[in-house]
Amino acid sequence: MSADYWPAVLDTLQTRLRKQQFDTWFQHVDAVEDSDDVLQLQAPNSFSKDWLATHYRDAIRDAVTAVTGKHPELSFKVKPLDVTDAARPPADAKPAATARSSHVTASPRIETAAVDIEIRLNDLCTFENFVVGPSNNLAHAAAIGVRESPGYTYNPLFIHGSVGLGKTHLIQAIAHALLNESPRPNLLYMSCENFMNQFIRAVQKGDLENFRLRYRHVDALLIDDIQFLSKGERTQEEFFHTFNTLYNAHKQIVITSDRPPKEIPKIEERLVSRFKWGMVAKIDVPSFETRVAIVRKKAQLRRCLLPADVVEYIAEHIDTNIRELEGAIIRLQAISSLSAQPINLNTAIAALSESILRERRAISIEDIQNAVVGHFRVKLSDLQSKRRTKSIALPRHICMYLARKLTSYSLEEIGGYFGGRDHSTVVHACDNIDKGIKADPERATTVKMLTEQLRNGR
Ligand code: ADP
Ligand code: MG
Image (cartoon, rainbow, N blue to C red):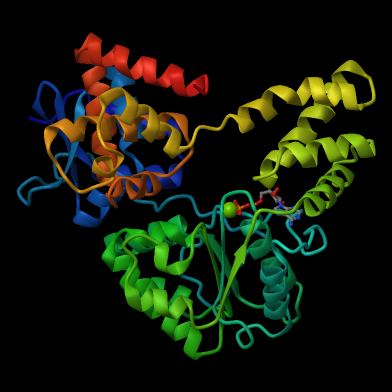
């Protein structure tokens, strides 16, 4: 029987998600109470089933809890054929809001194509504002090459590197530069998620032709965070054909990813090999000198006066993520304006030491493995193996759970540390431990103790 609280859950989700996300993914989803503690979600097709399970599991679970106070486990199914939408009031017939970005244009020749690009280019992400150093000069030079001869010299350009190192900045810099050319090219810049949203919507509406018209007739296609293409065979297929069409027509393709092509989970080999046809450029963690230059640049852009010793203090202590360098400047600026005092080294140390200490003490997966190995007296190699015996499954699940709670690794990355398991195994492990904590005080204590031990760096 359909869960009677589902409409209220949908209302909650609607207020929490962007309209386009909600309209794309939730309009045709039903929920059936399997048993007291399992809620079965029924999606209209297997693609949206997978997408919901991967991307919206937490959001759905939170909304269910908000409405019912319960914590049911979620299962995802394709809606059986005899369950139709007939009983449901007709969905608002209009497609989702279509906001045309002023910066990013789709082909104006294609009037019928829905344009709903959510990402706007950030005006600050330009080549002028990009500091070049040994960690990024290859990617930067390739990006300049794209600007000079789009579609020819470096095609595709594939930029990869870990979070906060400037991939989005660089791809947007290319977009800005190309859009300044005259005649202005038809350029499409979007996140991979958006590409997939558009695709699935086109499939649902039976409107693939327009989708193809739109994507295969651009002068440049720039896709950020392609690692999310890892799910959904049909989108890979579609992307593959889009890629070929554009490539053969010498249209520029730029892609970013948080990892190199071959490490993108579940990506088809033929796409990997195409990504490598052009230029693959890695961005590394910036050196001290580059960090100093970046802090100066950011401070200058924010009109924030920082003495040289403060610049060096920040650059010395925050060394892995440029976004955090910027966060430090923002923080100092706020403190200085609140206290109406200029920033000096002492105020900077007082203001930043906490976040710096936190960064220093960042918990690694190795720390977690060591703690769990010590606690359960199991072998590290067993944790990392594919063995499924119960005695090793529990410690392994706890590791995954702790990694999810205490580190910023992605589900895929965590799975990779434990015998190359995929994200759904990690999700399952976390659910499992969550349930265990609620049901079993002893389990709760173990997890709490390990968490504290790790947080205190012991
Ligand atoms: P990513 O997409 O790799 O996660 P972003 O491009 O969003 O990282 O960069 C994070 C922040 O760091 C942005 O504010 C960006 O402007 C800044 N940044 C990164 N690299 C540089 C650089 N070389 N010069 C200036 N700013 C940079
Ligand atoms: Mg990015």
